[in-house]
Image 1: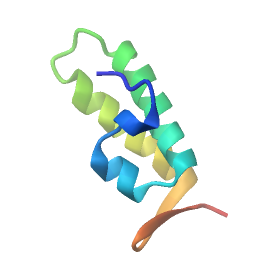
Image 2 (image 1 turned 45 degrees about the horizontal axis):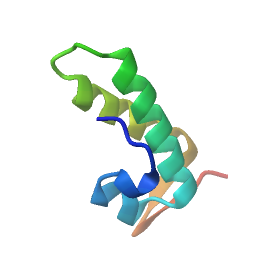
Image 3 (image 1 turned 180 degrees about the vertical axis):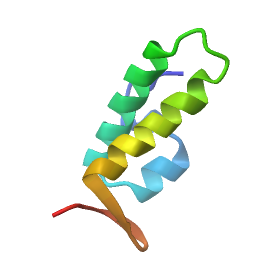
Image 4 (image 1 turned 60 degrees about the vertical axis):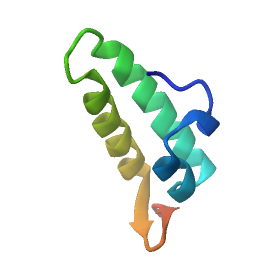
Length: 69
């Protein structure tokens, strides 16, 4: 399901990612969700694409994610 706001994101995303990274995740997820409409693994594909988008801009630096230099 597409997310209208960051507050609707899964708890694991909200609790670990900074606000800007949440925006990236939400936008990438929504675009991928619509692009893969009708596929049986639609949500899984959208989630993977969204995480990949976040990882292009952020790196996990325990315990938080930080923006790449």
